[in-house]
Image (tube, rainbow, N blue to C red; front, side):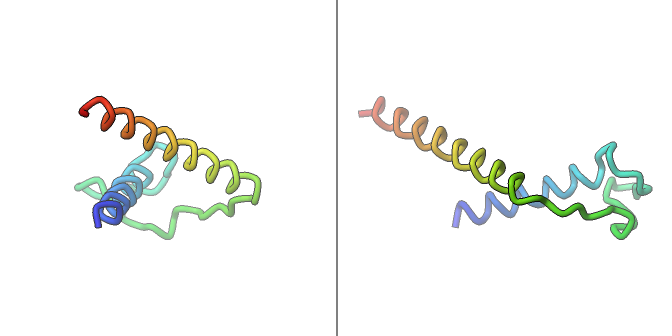
Length: 76
């Protein structure tokens, strides 16, 4: 439950950051959300890029688990 909520929040924040970023040339609305989402071009990811992202995420998860484990061991 907690992971899905966190993932949903990260997706929404990431979408807003991409929409309001300087890389996007589409005009912005008053509240910061993009007015026309069709102006943003979708780029296809290659297999090697996908593998690099997967490895990076796995490394981050592993480091997070290790950090949490150490924190729990200190409490005992």
